[in-house]
Length: 351
Image (cartoon, rainbow, N blue to C red; front, side, top):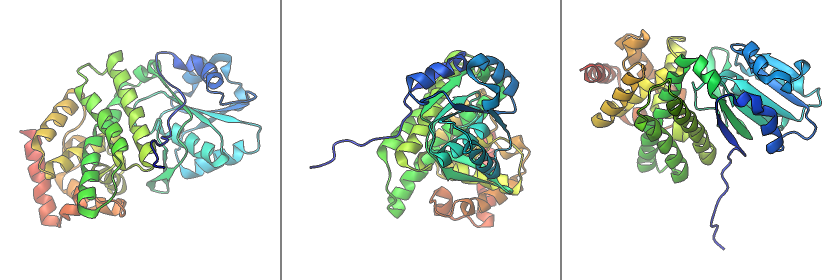
């Protein structure tokens, strides 16, 4: 008998709104994530005190662990520490590094996790991926996706600069999907239409959202788009629907010139470049208009990279994901070709 449906890992509940942290206990009970209330709260250092105030008496102080390095060692240490307790669920509250550490530890221990995002800087809120620092590099680890997801827009509004990174991350899905389809056509790599549709819908929603960044409607749209990106990765079982040449370029920048910009700002530039060398100039124009309106960088110089440094990143990028075929692998730039492409890209975007 043919299989008529498939199961896609998705959160039991998603809650996006102001003051959602006050409802953590209710979410745990609604989703039946904890049998006996022995819950560990993993909280980042950035807004840790404010988070504790918002939690009130929902969290016992001896059940709170603070993290901040976002490293594989920190995630492993957290798992070892919680393994000696009677904890039966984990609540991760914070930004990307905090949630990624909590996801890794909860997976290592086989515990359900509630992810509570306090900023919109990344598409890992609901994804089955933890990006953790290992030495000087950042590596992606497959993990279990959160069992439930909350986004507290009150906290998001306290860190308005972070939303730009989230915009870059989710809109870069446009480039990532184009790369996936190119690989399907040229190498025969299977493409998952469900995952592609979820990732594309997320990107198009943000591109079409006319609101200003500080407006609740815009923040809710971005939050839901980032969650959809996570679901796309869960459906595909890989980061492929949300990661292509744009992310390879960002990883290369991290390796060659660490600390110049946020991940999302780097993939924004990477996605524009990837679409430009693909020849989709109208798409580049549209994406650039949205990025400019929302304050994202468009060219290497806006993140204090020279054209020569960006050329270095473009040439190094394929080495960051040797298993992935994108427009960069297809074009296989030598140095003179990369220099021309980067210069023409900068001129096109600036004109």
